[in-house]
Image (tube, rainbow, N blue to C red; front, side):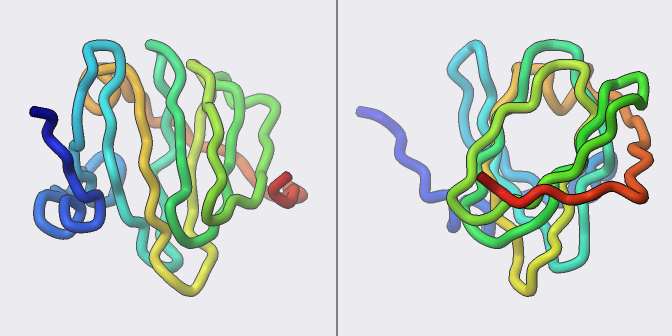
Length: 138
């Protein structure tokens, strides 16, 4: 029998504050190659800017809207793009990223990355975003 988890209930009952990211995160499952998580970003809040060296990270916006800021890990090529409910995107290794909730409701997202994603493979790196033009979602 497979274990089925409801992301809304799991987020409400299992989320733990992650001091590095600055948000509450609930671990969902692992498949040996990826770990899957759910989080909720409050209105006006954002994830701490960071990058990973071991593989990419996949984001799926379940509800809400925001802006994803990215740059190369060396700080070059900053970019900002609007995201909204239903969007999915891949953040390549060594790409600094920061997701900010710019909407008026919580931003809920699923994300997946290497099993060391939240432990040994997370490096804080500021993104110098102004004066970036923010691209609309495609």
